[in-house]
Length: 453
Image (cartoon, rainbow, N blue to C red; front, side, top):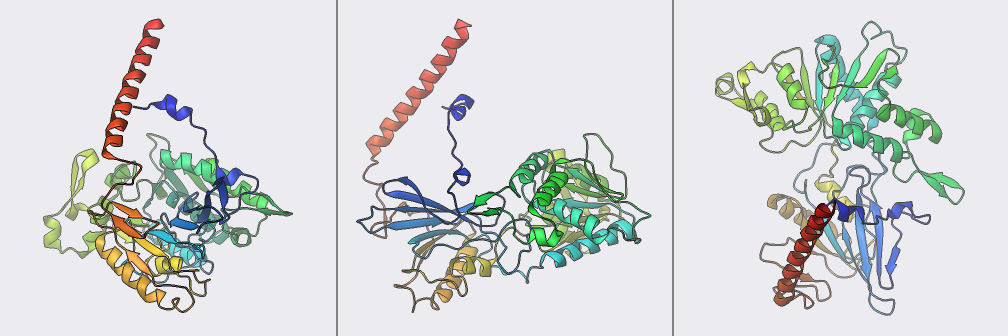
C-alpha cells in the first residue's frame, strides 16, 4: 500500500549526528521513554539498542536488543577497522541476544599482525610459488572493506621497499558493484569524528589504527579515501583497482569478489574460470551456510576419488554443474575474519570478566540461532551467572521463546496467550479495512493524476 513517494516523506534522524550524542548515553525521546546505542562491533553502523521506559516516580525498566554481536574486544582487535564492543548497562532488565555461534568456540583468533601474516602466506604460495590467481570470495558489506585494507597494508607496509617481489608486481582486482557503493560510505564514516570537549574523537574507528599505520587522524582519513574510493591505487608498483565489466584480469593476480558464500554475484564467473587449474587458490574468509557453493567446495577435500566421480557442484544461477573430479584448484579457509562472537564471546558480552555487576539479574531471551546453539548458550550463561549471583540481586532467567508463545508481559514477567489489551480482534479487523481503503485511495489518486496529465 506504500510506494517510493511515501518513503521520501520520511524524515530520518541520525542519532549519532546530534551534537551531544555519546555511546551508551540515554537520549530522551519523550517524558518517559529513552534510548541508548552501544557499539557491538559487527559491521560499521551496527549497534545494540537499549530502550528504557517508566516515569521518574515509578520503577524504570529497560530492554536491550543485542543485534549481531561482533568479535573484537579491548584486548584483541582482530577485525581491525572497528572499535571494540560495549557491554549492556548494569541496570538492564531484559536482554534479547543472538546465538549464531552459541554452541561453538573458535580457536583463539589471531591479532591484526598475525592475521596479516596468515594472508601473506596464502598470497606468496599462490601468486609467487604457483604463479596462479588467488580468488577471495567476500561479503560486500564489511568483509570486503576489511580485506581491501589488509591487502593495502600487506602491499605497502610489509612489502614496501622489499627486493623480494620487485620483479613481479601484484594487481588486486576488486569485483563487486555493491561493495563499491558500501566502500564509499566506509571512506566517509570510518575516520569521521567530532570534537568532544577539546578532543577530536572518531566514534567508530579502532583507536589503535593510527598507531598501526603511524599516521595522524587527517592522514588516516586520506588513506581510507585512497583505499575505498580511488581506483586504481598504485602502491610501489603494485595496484588495487576495480574490475570493469567484460575486463579480463591479468594473471597472476588477486581477485576479491562477492558473494562470500559463492552462491551468486560476479564470483561465480571467476570460480568457473579458475577452479579447473591447480595453480589457482580459492580462499574462504568466513561463514559458509550449509549447502552453499562455498560449503560444497570446502567439503571436497574430505571426499575420496570415487566419491568425487559421483559429485557435482551446482551453479544454480548459471544452470551449470561442474564435476568434482574436474576441480583442481586449492580450496582453503583463513581465520581471523569472523564478524560474529563465538560462544565465549557471547557469554562475555553479557557477563564480562571483571565487569560491573547488574543491579539485578536480567531476564535473557535467546534469539536468532538454531535450537542446539540456543540450548548450549543458555547453559553457559547460567553457569557464568553463578559468579555474579553474590553481587547481583536475584537469579538469572534465560528464556528460549517457543512457537506457541505469543506475548511476554514485561511488567509481570510472564507469557500471555492473549493479545495486549490495546489490540483486539475487532481492532485488527478495522486495521485491515483501513489499510485496504488507503490502498484504494492511493490507486485512485494516481489514476486521477494520470488522467489530468
